[in-house]
Length: 406
Image 1 (cartoon, rainbow, N blue to C red):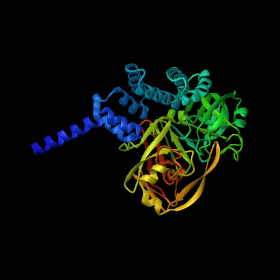
Image 2 (cartoon, helix red, strand yellow; image 1 turned 180 degrees about the vertical axis):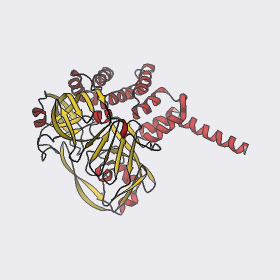
Image 3 (cartoon, rainbow, N blue to C red; image 1 turned 90 degrees about the vertical axis):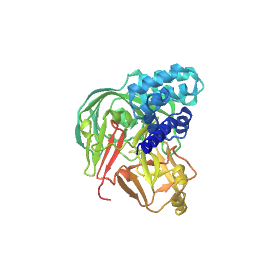
Image 4 (cartoon, helix red, strand yellow; image 1 turned 60 degrees about the horizontal axis):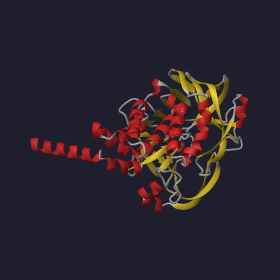
């Protein structure tokens, strides 16, 4: 037995050493193997280079250690690719947490290093506008339980609106008539925003809500992107309901839980119970969730603002037999920028394993030749709504579905 234990120990140590080698970690980073990289870095311990430690900490939204290690990676070699990537991670982490001034500082550093960067030059105007009002701040947060059948009731500068939560939104969004009704000051920025249809948004207005209250969460300086009322999904909604609550607010809630009765909870009491699933990370400004189909581990962007789950090229490559058995057709995808039609394949029933729950979609669509996202798909409400309750916990980084009727 002693010999066997020694062999096992040697093999485990050898695996950990190989996993923490910088070239292997870089391959994982480049391939968007986020969960594998997290596991490799955590097994590698203190010998892992600070850049990769910081990258994983940023994906877990561990702000202080991520900031420390990514800054050190930049200081170690300011002109390296690692330094450039570290700046991007710092920008994204600050942006999704509503730290507008910090995001602007990192953007300006990135601009000084690469003045011709299209991405940096694209986002500088928006964050200059957001930063004028200051960072989003949590005045107080206490556990809340509210009715959310028709969205979350929000008081913006003391005036009530009903908005839905959208994990797919880097910032909160509202229609221009709501912004005017709420008395917000608009500033136009020449920033092109990405959105679901692939069209993009060629410039938009921004506004900052000085006072934002929902339940027992009280925030200052919540940034909004303001779009024409004619854009989806606002075109058919009444005034006071033309808005979506984005990531900075949802992260400030720490955790949220909603169920089929239309009850929503958020704050410390909504945190996930039981063994941690560890199935949630951030990739830049996108929350991603690990799930499986037919025993294959897949990664999906998590989008509570999407009605349907759409599957991308990565899904088709991982499960070609499922796709071959499907039927070709065209399908429209609608986002803030409009609607575009793409070639797709509609498949028969597909079972998704999300956390500890199996969820069946009767006829999901896969887009095998038009990669609309960098992950295997975009997980939407058609999966989430089949659960008796859903817990989204940004404090422990997990998405938990409780079994319900289907």
